[in-house]
Image 1 (cartoon, rainbow, N blue to C red):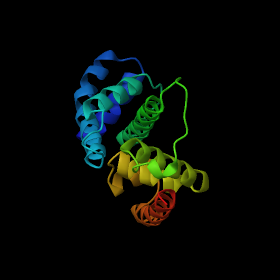
Image 2: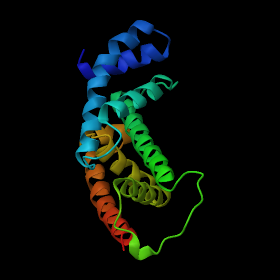
Image 3: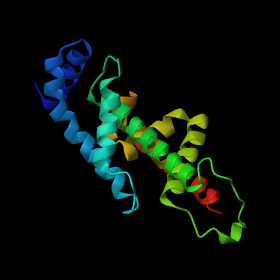
Length: 188
């Protein structure tokens, strides 16, 4: 049995209540989750306050609480990618709220004084653009999310979405163009 099949089998045994399967699958998936987080943070600011290890731990904690019948390992990693995206967005929202003073009295500053966007604002802009894309075309959004946040290959993305690799390539190409336009418009 291949490592990929092992992971799917162990994930499903774990969901069925086999705690030994959880112990066996943890080192297998943890390494991949760590690689996913490193790919995500390679595109982030070095000053980012959330560390890849913390992202992996938070995502893993949420994943072990999921009660799902895993179709395959790509399905598991697809959900992990979505969780990591949500955690990054939640972190950025929290930091933005703190930056704005939380419950403190808010004072409006002149827009000219804004020195540029922070990494948190970039993540929030990206999330808003992905949400808009998802509202218009769920599959294109899923392809982008799985490929960039999840680090899934074209083949793995195709398996996770049950489409062909050529469809993934086409959807990714179009989605990247759409996303670039949306982010450019939000930065003006």
